[in-house]
Length: 125
Image (cartoon, rainbow, N blue to C red; front, side):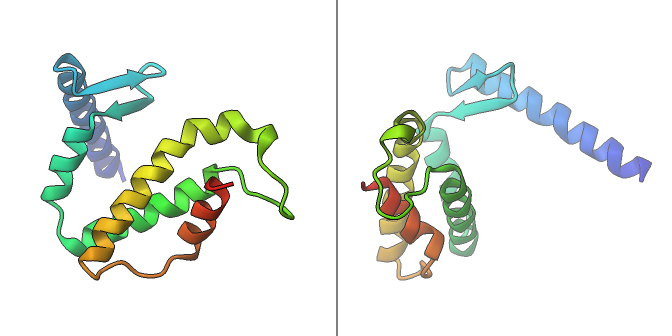
C-alpha cells in the first residue's frame, strides 16, 4: 500500500512538472491554483494522434457521459433560460465533442451513446 502511495505521489509530481512546462510555453493555462488546467487545442490534437482508434472511442464516450452530467438538462420541454451561464460555459465543449463524433463517424467506429444524444438535444435548445 505504501508503494502505491509513493507511485501516486511520484506521478502527481511528474504531472505537476509537465503542467508547469506547458504553462511556461503558453500551451496550457492553470486555473484555480493548478487544480484545473486548460490545454491548447493543438496539444489536444497531437495527443489524439498517438491514441489508437479504440482508445479514442473510449475517451470520447467518457467525455460525453461527463459532459452530459455537467450540462443542464431540459425537463418537460422547458427552455434552459435560468441555466444560461452554465450552458454558455459548456457549449464550446459540446461543440467540440460533436466535431469529434463526426470524425469518429467517418471512420465508422463510433457507437450509439444515449448520453451524447440527450446532451446534443439539451444543448440545441
